[in-house]
Image (tube, rainbow, N blue to C red; front, side, top):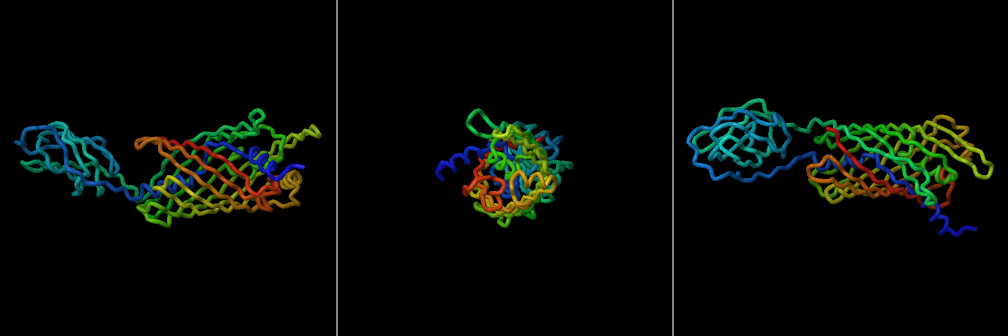
Length: 362
């Protein structure tokens, strides 16, 4: 007879899954928290040791022609020596450097789009029109991609490595604290000889031959709060794959049920949305091949399984100017009475380790 300690250790190793993680609710929440209000500090201008201005400045071009608050633009023209102020739509830029009498670099401030003017000790330049400040009050769509692999059994380690190519499109409404994401992904599975390993894949949404997720996040807190809380909801439409080889009878079982898997939860963020603690409520419903599914898992014809899940995660940007982020996540599915039909385990928790790489596509 196995001891309880040995049993938990076995299930832990059988259900430890390594992902390029494709659940983006926390990433959306991070975007709402950090980007809803862009704050830019005003600093004094810096310049080279140029002679005192003798003529009114003239603006000939601005590159790029549109930018967000906090981004850098280059203003080209003449007579920039001695410039003391630059404004866009009547709002001063956050800061600027006078590179030469014909070039200025400036950081866009918080304000509306409008004419750009440069002022020096002699006077004010022509009003340069056509420059646009990009605002996010009406939302933005950011396509992104990630990848996943599936190696169901690595040697004798019983470590499942699941790798899943995925693509998503985010819509973030900073003013209303809302964000949405649509995600499409898929991975492949090798055959397993353990029902516990098969069950661990079924209970987790990311392990699906084909998956479509519609996800929404609402932030209850202001964007300038260090610690925040939000509500997450997602609808997963999944094609699962059960591929099992019974070593005792030398027979195989292959089932591909269609599953609808909604999840609702609370997300709490700390340290400027870099650390997350979350709790979810899973509702897994089998829609096709019900008889085969219930016979395989001996679920007494039960096709709806409700179980909690807890998560602790950290999201780390590669650098301040990078479009890539790394996420490390540790999930714990509560192996309650409903989940035990699928997990084939009497242990209380089923752990998953997930590592994700996010990349925006520009």
